[in-house]
Image (tube, rainbow, N blue to C red; front, side):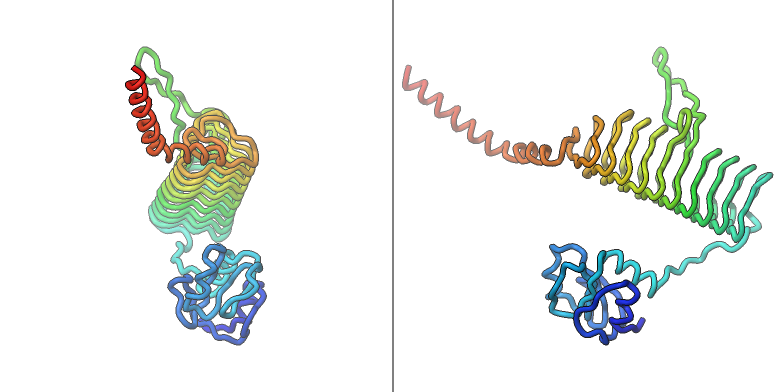
Length: 343
């Protein structure tokens, strides 16, 4: 890589402050950067690092007016940096080309243009796969499932029967979509399986991390809305409905028949009971246990989850319990002494 700061500003639609003719030869993090590198600073709390970084230039937000070295101001430094990396160093991946001889295709399979299917993948009867899809080795797609265009299905993904997946969906290794919902009827101490005859529907532009499980509905469908991004190791139970553009972070568990709105963030290890709703634009903070429905535009935290400000006040009181215990013990001792004198 060798570009001037002016060329880079053109790539990321930024505004230069400083010498536009500086030559940039590398990309790095702000702490690791050396002379010739460009880096970025998105969080204002790291502003002091502008003085310390060895980088020759920094991508910042438009709020940064002055800096000890050349900067490129942008609307979103993190996104601009990602765009620059994609432009300078596009990901090199060896995608399958064509249909591998060891892949197994059932009857009446419909393949769009330029579909690639890797070794030992199994595509069952009456599956439809859209243009430009890439299905890596060891994947399974069950009968009558539909996959839209330009999807990437990484190795060892299982997509069960009659599942519908939109376009431009990315599914990472080890994920299982459409496994049976966890439903049992207990009679005289024995657990009898309840058939799960619904399906799963995934919208466009969804990304699903590694080892995620999304259960099929008991009836009707489990839904993941368009633009939603799901991290690794997430469990989504039967008949859950997740809206558009939500973020589900690692190790979240969502119980059956819960509805999650649009633009919701469920942070790491949050757990949601079944049959509740989480309103649009809400945030569930990490390790929260959600036992009741959450209205829109609300941030909750704790176990059981409460509005974040209330939960933080309660937690502050808990942190003071040792000191409160000592105070009560001292008061108790003084009261006993006074009672002894009165007697």
